[in-house]
Amino acid sequence: MLILNVEHHKTFIVNATKEDLSLVQKALTVFQKKYNPNPQFIEQEWNVTYLLDTKNFSFPTAYLSEVIKFAEEKSIKLDIKDNRKYKSFTIPKLEIKINLSLREEQIKAHNSMINNPTGIIMMPTASGKSRVILKAIDSKKVRTLVIVPRRNLQDQLAKQLKEAFGNSRVDTQMPWQLKEKIKNGFSSLKSEDDVYEENHVLRKPKIKLDEELIKPRTRPTEKRSVFDEITTVKPSKIKFNLDMDAFYSGSKSEDPEKEYIDQKKKKMFEKSKEKQKAYFEKMNLKRKESIKNPKIKYKDIYVFCDASLPSMPAEFLSQFDMVIIDECHHAAAKMIREGLLKMNNAGFRYYFSATPWRDHSAEEKLLASAIGTNILFELSPEEAILYKNIAKPVYEQISSPEPKNFMQDKKKWRDILEFGIIGNNTRNKKIVELAIKKLDEGKNVFITVDEISHIEILKERFKNESIEVETIHGEQPQKKNLEIIEKVGKQTSGITIGTMSVGEGTDMPNIDVVILASGGKSSIRLLQRIGRGARKGLDQSKVLFEVFDFFDWFHPTLLRHSLKRKQIFSDYYKTIE
Image 1 (cartoon, one colour):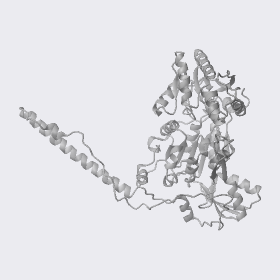
Image 2: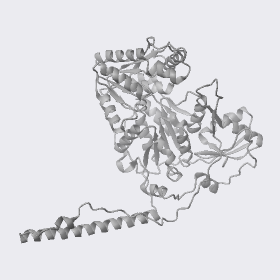
Image 3: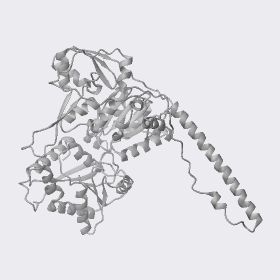
């Protein structure tokens, strides 16, 4: 029998037989194939992820439903104690300041969140997920953390939240007192596991792990010191760039009145300098006291990129009652999974995406361990088009011209990619011809690629045709990318080339044509790229947009990828041809 104690973040195994625990260990282990460049000569290697924490015999609560299914299949008896408590209206004064009217399908999505504490909301790109998020925060009225995958999404969503709830309620950075404590190596809270063990009688299984089945993780010892006081505080360095003594020195003026005025100005400046110095000393003393006796003032809503989660201490993450992840298909990443495990008080957990799945079974298992499998609401693309929320894609696969270089002897994926996609002269020429043709029709064209080298090749070809194009990629400054995205989103015609920097949530409503130049077989990347053209346009008049893909028949691997992309489109959009 397995005896489980369920918390918001983790489920603890408090008792188990050796046989049952061994079976659960196996179910909570994920094996992923490592990339093997030479499968004929190098033995296949694996990445192993252990969802069972051997320190306290716990696993992510999001994966509880899968563990229950597994236990039923293996006839393992379960005794589950649910300790979860859900707090609502802890911030009753949190009120929305804008008129937020929801459409019919958005109301359904919101109601599903009101009636369920955790789950997945599937909504296509441009169907209004951000409005549902705003309404959910307004309804729950609890301290909330919103996690997004990219900086441009963070800025975009933070702006909407500040307009809705006010600047004083929303932030994109941790409080400075907490940063100071981290900088000085102190922590005022124990780990969430230690807190749990103090509040609950935790009976760990008195058996050792089966070492042949699963090797327990070895962790570096963590030195934790209780935060008492900071003995050394760096004083603020006050620098005065203007040396008034030198400025007023020199030969005396022949004009007595002018000399008197100059001396008076000098005295006034010195008095001002003393006041300024006293002010800084007072503020520095205040800072010392606040660090010794920190009174951290948390905002009500925080918006963070998922890459910043590893730097977030448990002290900060444990004070949230609700977490919302936008584009939740990224939650299979280790940094997000570990961040969610620190949020022991977050009872409300909602996950938004148009594509909440992964293409590989191992990644699918890791994603389920982070967000679960419970779908609260699903808006299909056909329904979104019917509700007139998004434009309808018209998909066409163009047969690629035969490349100049012989491809059949290419076995390694990098060689196939370079000769068949990036450096394929005939294919790139076809892309440029198609883009120019649509530009002449007055269309706003967006070309998707995977690598910056492909951007440079296409850009040079357009330059030879005397056509200027906009480019968006990760090596450009973020500010410049945002300026180009805004420009492209408003223009009625033009050509833009972009990498995955133009990914989830990028708002370019006036895109009329999407050319998929990158190949590949990832369903998430394909659908997210097609979604760049799905927005209705600034005047909301766009009904259709064109999607051009390439049928790369000249190599077996690229042929499989082309057929896979066509199948993905058919499965997702179903009735749309």
